[in-house]
Length: 306
Ligand code: DON
Image (cartoon, rainbow, N blue to C red):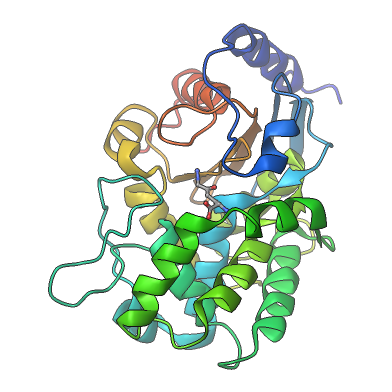
């Protein structure tokens, strides 16, 4: 590649690489085993050019970055009203694993927190068919990535054995009929969604598909309609970074989503998909160096949308 962008991306990684603050997630035992020093960044334009630096090929579990994409699949399948009826779109101002239900309706406040994502997950496919749902999630995430993805069975087993907080959330949701299936089955299937393996490059292509109005920039498949991509990016902008969403949108300025394995994505409508990966997390559950990489890209490339 003779483009200067890869050189620039290496510079960004050098600038961010020295920060070893934060800690890898250990509430999922398998995540505590990863090499904390890994660091990668990838950018994909909406016309399909991919630029990358650092560790962009190795695989990690998608975790909460699955949430905007499964929200997209549910919107596409059920329509906006049906999904809004179950899950609101208001920032919670709380951690991702708080229950955060809206007073009155009892809906989870948004689809980016665990409570909302668990409900959204159950909206795919036929009720009472967790296996069918898992198949649809895997096929849908693969379409966003533009290649067949798979599930990290070790991470899946490790998280289902210790997902006490999500079992509690799912039981609360079941008590309010927000979900209608057995809470343990629902958490198991939602956890499979979180255990899909991706690379930083995959995530950049997935984000670019949202940025490109739902059309994968390389395969050219229309994965979801344009209104769906707009709805998803809007909710990422307001809720994707949980209890740091306000700081994020005012300082970095583009829709984003983080995950506890250390991935982070940004989607700039009509322009770019961005992904970074580094496992040590800040207190909000977002990658310390991933956030730093995005801050650099936003400042240097003028990506703040406001
Ligand atoms: O449900 C959980 O707790 C994990 N599978 C995903 C959480 C997550 O990635 C939160 N984001 N930073």
